[in-house]
Image (cartoon, rainbow, N blue to C red):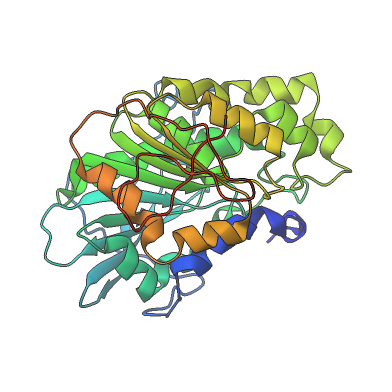
Length: 368
């Protein structure tokens, strides 16, 4: 992996915390380096056609792009008493095959599905853990896991100076397109409830979840933790960016390219989706001023939760508690309602929202 991944380890701290909260990775099967994927297990609705080359990263929509999927290839299927886990390779872009994990609960014919996308520079190891898979499928839910563009196994054949932030328009734009293409593929399977789709995103994955929900109405629920955004201030103050590179990301040319991919612009429009925004205030990757602007941009129907420290967050969201909200919202058929907020907040405590999903879930009350 490029030097940028090494120097930006703090960018994965929150994602790493998420993993530690409810994952003990036990290798039920190994993903071999250079695995020879062969044989499609899917329906004839996906035909063998050349991978498209035309893509408009400035647009959330696929309308101006030509991404033609190749037949998905099944790499391995693992059968566990509680779930089945498939590793597939999907591809609709030259030189960018995507490892896609589809994890289904046993005994549920057409489960709702939640897409999981963690922050740059995450890898796919978590999706291979039996405990992780048991948690994400608990209650009868399917889980779909992958990594964003220019991340993990998807960072190949690039100059060392190019990385997720330097190529932010491409990284975000192509990843939002990937989410829509993945949903298109999932719809061909016939074994998932495509009317109940959610997305869980952390850091840059949270940004992509917001943009994807704005682009694709099939996503009914998003649960995001410290999404990146508000690009001028994020570029100026984020600890993820090396100081030697920062000036190039503050130029009008760079900021203009990513302006249309700012969640600040799209969050207010997510009034028909169930939205939860969780923020950890001591996360230096997303500065406090950015967190505040993202929080204020959230629609009135969004549930906003803040924690002062990562320790408070881990105490409130450990175990399977982290996923209870998104699962509950994916199951519901009700429309989102404006959240009633309480301005009172105990000093030094996490902020807590009023609309608690269950009595065991510690939540926060927004102080804005």
